[in-house]
Length: 626
Image (cartoon, rainbow, N blue to C red; front, side):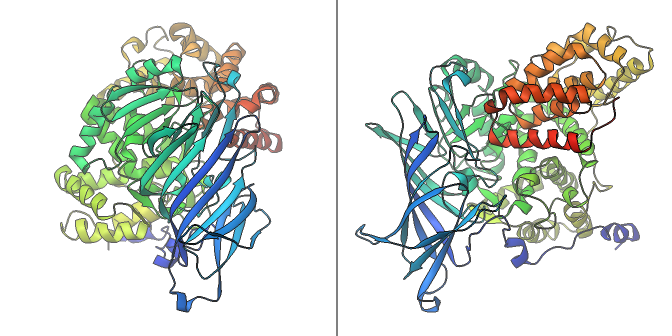
């Protein structure tokens, strides 16, 4: 081993044993003893009460031989704020026998363990339950909070560990199960789930998911929804006023699917439908099988932000098909998916756009790494030191993709594409750890092509903090010219009006803004805004970069637009930077708290939690006035 590599490995966290790596510290489940293999849901949606009530019947696969089990076994399930009404074992004829159970005191992060006494290892257990109106994985909207104001709306967000707030189950990505559902809702309410729709039977809407999925992919949405087909196997769902616009924006989805199939094998999920949610959805997208959830902020009118759709589609191979076994391994989902996303964008929209998007993302990663601990900078961090929700950072997404770009460059695209296709086939419908992935990588790529990559380089990427010296970015000539223009503007040799911004596409504008000072001078902000009307931009990604800078520069004229922005957008990536900018001064903090207090009910529970954390931190450690 080279001396430089040896020194670098000092900072590397040692790989974990298979047993350690497979343990999920965020679940009470004991999948080594028993696993759920299928779930049958029978649910009713109560919009006035903001609750879901009904039953879930779990088909169980007991992993220990009956002879080795005690006379009375225990089934441990994850719950959060659920009311458990009864638990029963069902025999082959459907006869029910009551089972005793205990619901433990809640843990702030994990919720409550539901321990079910299970004599004789029953093959099926049915649980009757009711959700809380405050379920962390559900958002209920009054009809006035929707775009069309025709009917109330419900949607779920189960990732990372929020499925347990609306279904009692083994809420760990290590356990995969199929499911079917029967759902009752008020007349005029269309229900969608992460499953194939079945013919309705009266007021009951049915669903079937024959493929085994992890719990975080459990999803439900309901509202006054319309559908518009985009191909024989794809469609867009949205409120009526949005569906045509969304279908135009996402009209390339079939081309994206064909591209990905050519690269990595057939699409194995039947349909690929997309649902545009209300603006309060806390993420850009969620890869629920058969029904991707999307934020309306990706509808820019020029398809400039549809890489989010490419990302969620790519999850049909990396994440949904091959799944990380624990949240510590989430980069196996997100890093692989971000890599595939970029390949889709290159094939459909060209290499220039793909390279520009990745360089912009890499810049964001470098910036955010400055505020992350060394452990959080690792692709595979030490277990239990990072919360389940906190594992979803740019490290998992962008550093993970960057690692795969490194491998592609060393082995060549033809070899690496063939390897990835085999990887998806080999681990299809399985949940795996980082160490399993690395064992397969070593045996099927590195050892078969000696001299291309040293194994210490692989470990540096996966287990060391920061970015290794082997991290390389593609050259983007347009960005070189933008760097020069930005430097001229900042040193006063080029006026804002003289910037060639009229020739820049969205990603070139994002690159220009990303490399401005965090707090430009007030004169610089006012000059840019006068020339390019950035405060009034309808592009949410531009707003996320511009508005915090305007606030920090002291441009009070931007405050009303920033307030409107953060109240109409619930996507955390976009909203939180504006709240942080306001929180940097006492006056801004008071302004943000007033706005949040009047509108907090319109945010998703996860977004509320994140905003309140920003506000609390500002009170505890107020930043100096710029």
